[in-house]
Image 1 (tube, rainbow, N blue to C red):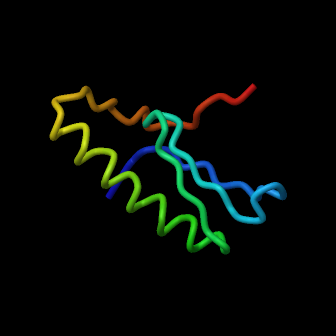
Image 2 (tube, rainbow, N blue to C red; image 1 turned 180 degrees about the vertical axis):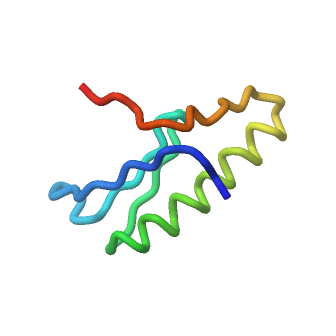
Length: 70
């Protein structure tokens, strides 16, 4: 189970739900439904973390609290 915060929002421009993980730079996914965007971001997070491990890149520790948005 991932403990990173996931932000999901509707994009009129893309006509889809967009999901992103701010703590994992570039980790984003989309879906036609909220549920599909959530499913896709879980897969994207898995791949992001696998790739970071493979290349020896640092993996951020989950903050465990809500991020502050401006």
